[in-house]
Length: 430
Image (cartoon, rainbow, N blue to C red):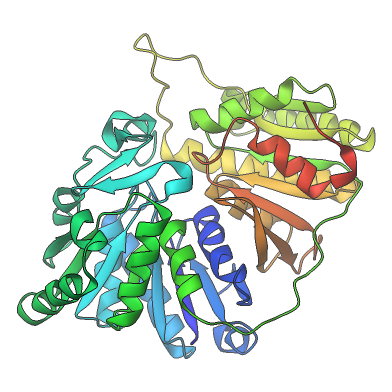
């Protein structure tokens, strides 16, 4: 089977595509969609990023439709719609558009991702046991999630009926689950929103999808993708050698998520890592201030890397509001940050030999890859659940190992683990 994955940001595209790569599928994430027919001949899974998480709903739906049409023309037979495990973005609108191109009587969906503490119970999305709208995701500066009951949230985004497949049914007799799905398919085709709280739940759900032939369109995070990857068969291929570089690693962190900030703080305790923070006020300002700050950051990063030190490029966070919440950024500011960090990545990499890249935040990953002229990423495996690695395809640093990570994923020591993975001779950081 040729599978297409449609994601709304690059880190999500990677953390889902790698679930199939781990099972032996050759998985490509192209940044350019112009010649998918040529790519599909050398790939089992093509992963397209619509970069639409923060787009207006109508724009997001159009991008998803264009991606689905491109994959259909390339000969792809089924679609996995990658959604954020915290349900940020335009999930319903994009899924609706994809179903217009790949019709399916029922599309199974769950954002559950147990390794990152994402679970769905009675239709409510929980992050670390807390309803998602009460977490930092509810205050996300770009795509906040204000509703935790997913049938309600989906009902605001999509015209099709939403059926809730409860945990008790999923864990019960398979005959009952099959009967319920067939009744829904006959009486009221639409979306099946599935409860899931453990990896075993996702395995059960994947087997249901395959057994009931509901694979034309499926939607979920990396969690369900992992389970589906195991339920399908892929060609056996020789795995590529893991990174073995000795040169320093460049980490580019643009996400303001508290998880990522904590991961940077963890690294700062290691005297072999330098953290360089750009002044946000200068980054979002045109003209001389922007150029001077870019020159300063690049000059400092080059010096540190050439001295053999792993280096983090990130932003100085603005002071919090009196409520303790972070100040929301304007969309134009988010674009300026991505452009700044992308340019900085290219200029540092041009003059300093790198052992690998770590890119945190979907927009940042796109900006950095584009600035280096990479045409995509060939996914290889995972550093840890939800943190994939691959090699850059084409451009100035072709074949360089790169780790990508969504802002809200991982433990405090995740960045440190990624450095050890990309630069195994370096030793432990703490």
